[in-house]
Image (cartoon, rainbow, N blue to C red; front, side, top):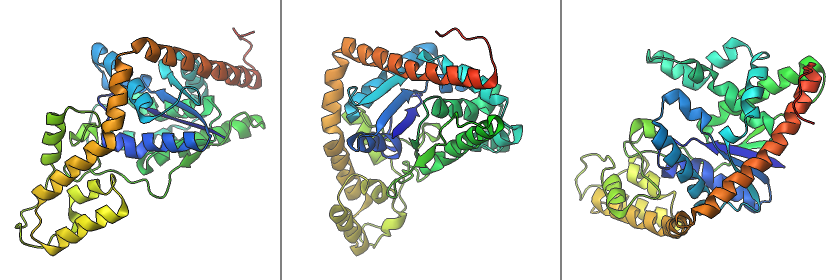
Length: 327
């Protein structure tokens, strides 16, 4: 069973990236899925990233993947732009994709609703993502609940292509969304996202992490008054890091009164440190051995491209494209 997913290198990763995606990568590796996990650098270009920052963020994601526990002996870690066949496949698939399917994509609709400038890259985004998924004949795609639509679009395109040629060229992918995967709230209660500037960074220095957690929005309920845990952003983040028993303890203290939001933030800060400190130490060690990190990415990209070439050969054959540079 093959799994595939990716993370865009658009900044430092935050806890929403971990609980919404990377944690699932770890779980699938433990369950012996054949995992393909990539750095989606092509997908960043529609936002016009600064070149130097894109380079830095790309290496940061590789370090983060390894710090999370992805093992290059068990999972393939690769760079999207090192597999040019993904762009080739995206163009081919575009000929079997109705405009309306792309117009229904959340990213396009959101930008349209806000009257923001939309470039072709943004409109094309779901098509490139479909190529990412279909190129490696992925069975499952671990995603957050808000990303399910992209897998559905890939499946629709694959079905249309397969039906047109009466041949099962592409595997029909399924989203992998465990029941306990949550949309992680940000410091303002919205979905945690870099675009909302409401993130809590996983590997921030102590001062930055404290500032981000202490900046979580709370209401003006007095210290002595009871507080509703369900409406408390601090509690909703805290319960991601601790056992059910510990989260219940905080809920009881909030309900009882005499326990303020400042107390809750201190508990959250401690929980975040405890949870991520082993990964933080591992990441620091890896950053001191970039030769190894570069080797992991190079070898992973080579493995991914080997699979990609076989898929493109099959696609060209079934479509009747004669030009084939591969032996």
